[in-house]
Image 1 (tube, helix red, strand yellow):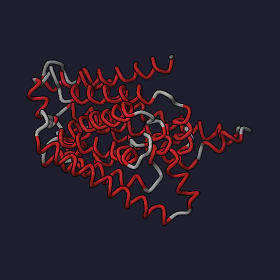
Image 2 (cartoon, helix red, strand yellow):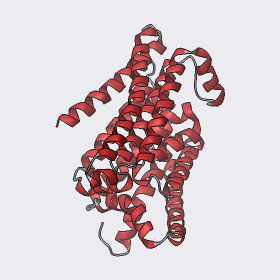
Image 3 (cartoon, helix red, strand yellow):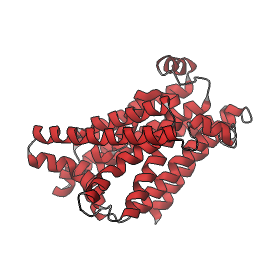
Image 4 (cartoon, one colour):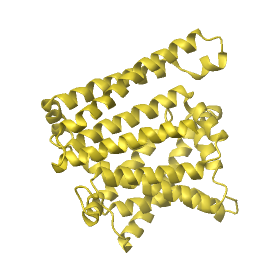
Length: 337
């Protein structure tokens, strides 16, 4: 329970910074109001480095063989260096206008004068580094798989993540602060589903699932069976928890709505399709350090394309169909979900 209070406290802190940034862009609050909070995010990123180095030292000096096997010094060291590099970059981004201008020249959707966009960069890098740091400290793929084996809260986690992603997206684009509801929906690319959204989403979702089958078959032929089993263990454990049809719909639908509204709706217009797809792939820790991470990037890119060409609503349908397709196929073939 204490861990949840800490997590909720951090999340509310992040949401407050987004709230404050929107008020700065609106012109209601002075820019200096949020600057200290942004520097705190850079400091948080920097602290990951020393924590990582300390974890390496403890594991190497520990007589606990399980701990030494769980923590890979190279992986932890690389993530620690990445976090320090991100901290340095974000501190300069906050401090110097020329750095923000430099970023705007390379990321076309980024506005160097927007405090909301500046906040988005920092929060994305914090979330990314935290996800990678947790991954390497928990033992990599084996740690993720073990955590999924021991977890019985997949439905709660799905609902929580969906609410968090949607809330962050709406707050980030300034709903009820800088934008009305119609303006917010237009900015996020959302609308009531029309035939084009449903059909295009269904076609893309099915196509991506069929492509994933081919990709997996090729991958399985390129590695030995033991390696393939180890690399797919975490993803398999997640699938094993989908025991009922309502749970399948809840998890598949929750991931589709939450991730698409946040990634494709809120982030993609700022960071572009390539960076957003990379962020999307790296957040899927059950696929990190496996060939599947490349395909997850391709999936994210495809969802990004349908968001640009049609709508975020269509991307939600595509994501949902892709998520639920293997379970539908299992039921059709006479298996049980």
